[in-house]
Amino acid sequence: MSYTLETNTDSSKIIHLNSKDADKSFSSTTSYCLFTLDTPIELDDNHAALISLNSAIVPYSMYNIRDNINRKIPYVNEFGGSGYVLLDIGNYTISTLATEIRDKLNNGPYVGVSLTETYTVSFDRKTMKYKYSCNTAECHFDFSLHPDTAHIELGYPSDGTSATIDNTPIYSPNVPDVNGSVHSLFVRTNLTSKSSIDSHTKSFSTILGKIPINVNFGGVLFYNPRDNLHKVLLDIKQINQVVVRLTDEQNRLFDLNGLEFNLSIMIDVVNKTEKLSIDKRRIKEDYLIEQELLKKQQQSKETRGRPRKVGRPKKN
Image (cartoon, rainbow, N blue to C red):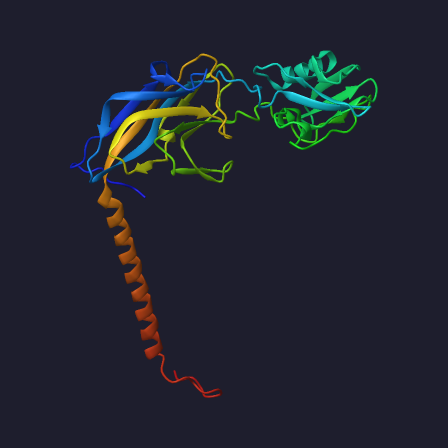
């Protein structure tokens, strides 16, 4: 549905936000903060706010291996004892992650039972999968033991287990995705609560905009007005505070590692009665179309005449 910005409404407004100017931070990161406007945006009773994410500039400084999300590699040794190793927090490519996995399996530190054999981990470019082996039958991965494992990054489902790793190489069943937890960046605000539905919660969320991650680590993510197709209609009288959260698709907060973000929120003012008039006009149009079809059907029945008997020749 489109809205017409009429001359009898207030002009559009843009709120430019820089995280370094936030009045309050809700975490140790710069990606969850509150802004208080010294000059609130006010609307009269006949108007509503049409809000959209106009632009954003966010540094791609978040890591793809993060604490309490995807650091653990849980295993079970040949005697049935379980343990895990923790990957170092950081940003990895498919090759550097293979080296990190190998080093941690061979050297620890181990939580629980230790591993004593020598492991080899490599990326097979033909199959696009990781290849695992060790000098004797020693262990297998069991990703069902913990919720915050690197199963996607290692090429396994969340409840998957590997075959026994020995001197015969085994391949991960899936193609590993080193960016499994950072495919997109979502801008969430307190201004929206019933504007979008995401597949993770299966319900309404506070997402105002989605920024695809299409640059390499260390680059900058840009969200431009031409990307913006989503607008939120809010029936509010005043906007004096804006809370912004930058998260992944599972609503987990990103850590920009000390860097700042910028974004702009567009606020267009529309008449409340516009939506009602559009809906009434559509209902009326649908009714008239339906009545016209019924009228044509009735006329067709009246002019059809007496049905022709079987065998009677048709008049020319």
